Image 1 (tube, rainbow, N blue to C red):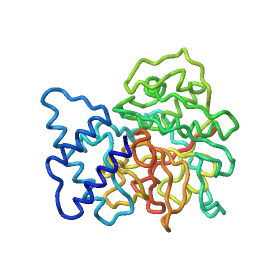
Image 2: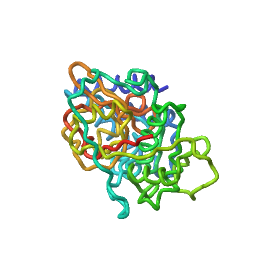
Image 3: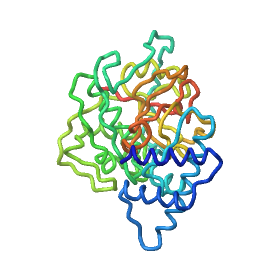
Image 4: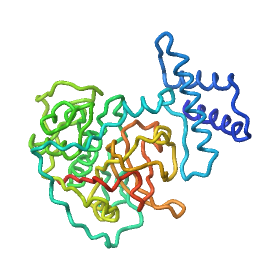
Length: 333
């Protein structure tokens, strides 16, 4: 179904590329397919409002793809949301540290190491020959991206240390780490999540403490299945040092994702001057590589596998794109 809808959008783009705006009938046809594919249900009187937003977003996607960019956009499940709505529901990184948390020492890293030209912790293309990344998850309409970034790096750290790769509980972090400065679905920090896990003696599995996409009451009945001993704030604004750091495992980072092109990113190496350094979204670097001469980072997102490149985005490397090198942090087993 997703493939069929992609073909329909492509055909619309071809028409649009000939300077002929899609007809109202064609917009209606695409919106009907969109509603069916994503099982959308609207309150009485809301249908036409969502339809008009969809049309605006479709125009944006086709205009972008007809220009000369290094990445493409595509319609997805967020097509009936205005950008303001999308931003309010799917961001959640808040750079406000709890007053009693002391900053960890910044690790000094040699950026001149003889690293491989590519690395991917999703496969065995890494120094440890270990798969250290779980399946892409979906935070849904809860500003808990910081929790997903945190579990992602801890999952990797735990697996690389010789333990089974296990999906860890974001909901536990949402419900239980408020004393460490986090605010559940209203945002938080990865470092503060790590502080909680260290003090708690570990974190439970996703299966034992499943995600609810809403704030809840902290449960204390599950048994931790993974733990970390510490975490390190990596050098700020020194992107070259992320290469030696990622040899040790995935890295939690913060980026600015409140640009409308992020909403519909579908593939390619993302490079866009509109993406600044107003950090508002926690994600996870899981590797790096090069595509047609463009160096990039492989970044795991938490908006589901239907977004981007099966849930991932490739951010151009060595440009501090979207502020990715400003607040990197990495846990240690």
